Length: 241
Image (cartoon, rainbow, N blue to C red; front, side, top):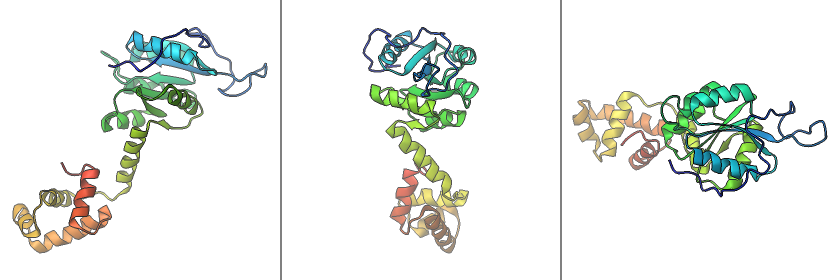
């Protein structure tokens, strides 16, 4: 795993791991009139990454690192004990519990999980979001983006890297569209190969009239009116290879 592009430094404003916080909500005035910092728990199986994040977050006012974890099991235990506002969670954590399962066990109304990882595949994003992650950030993002995402997560707002946001939106659009039947998918697959109605009918052992009927339904479901349009949308939504 490639560590994030962080600049080493002194923890500075970051608190000592394990230090209890105040009972006030993050970002709200404390008893002395000061704003309570966002309390963060780090979870990454690479010590050098955690050290870099600790140094980086220590330079940011209003953010306090209260603990570290090197595995999913450690993160679950630390989150239960420390009750941080945000858990900064990597997905791949070596042997044992992965970041998705840890997220599923930790995520709660008062403990938000912000995924920070190098992985942005559809499967990774979907699993993390379904497990309850409030945000999904890539390690390639700038420090300013990370700071903003932590504050957003602490307030219960979604924070997504642009590439991830696009994937989530595509997924939402796909979920909102009527599902294709197995036969419609078969015909769409043949259409993507460049076959005409007659050849599709022969390949699937159906009549040309049946092919035309199915094509009409496919066009309606995909919101297109041409064969080329149907193929383009199908490839965009990964309905065909």
